[in-house]
Image 1 (cartoon, helix red, strand yellow):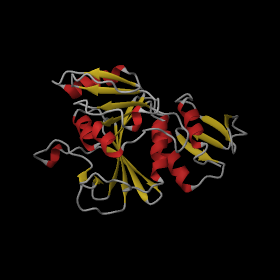
Image 2: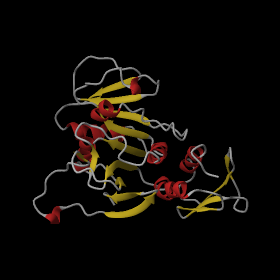
Image 3: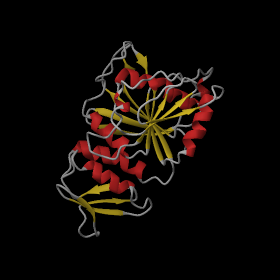
Image 4: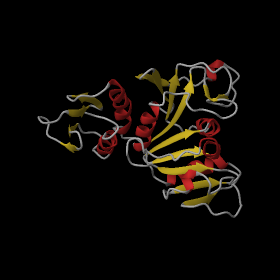
Length: 277
């Protein structure tokens, strides 16, 4: 059976397999191993998972969403937004726990586990104080990248106290020390374009951008995002912080109209917009 206790192992095996080949695995309660076609109870053919094993609809949905991303041969930058159906990611006071189903955190940790790096802005650290790890599924933790233009963070936040590596991009010349962190200073002029150049040098295959609204919007405006993923909860908030704040357009023929697909996840909907395809 596939559960939160072994899905991290499963995703890691898929991630490290040959992208273009079919994959056959034998899933047991406490272990997952490569297998021959005849003995396999979980296999992937043409990037689509097929099951001969007990699996809940929830975990099947996770794999149906993530396997095509993992098996993609191209480098991908994925921005993920959890929001209400009316496009809010938090209340005006910053509260966002929980807009989405708490079980959706397991999905988010699965998405983190298939990513080599995760990007957030400093406001996300200040408001949520996250760890940005895969602790719910015991998966591989991505490299943490924080955009902190004014270098306003300090060592009181969790990410500076768990021993995992951080890379901080800033335009500030302030002299401070942040635990387990490398600080990279960029020129304020064309900061986002300089940031993207530095991110490309890291040679991470899959990069997850998890927030916040300002960071994701700025990267979309600079055509850096390949997949924009919305996790939409069936609730109405009515006011609060918008999920996106893109540059204004003067005519609807300038609107972004990308290819897309839809997936159910429990009582929520995952929408993937393919911006650079």
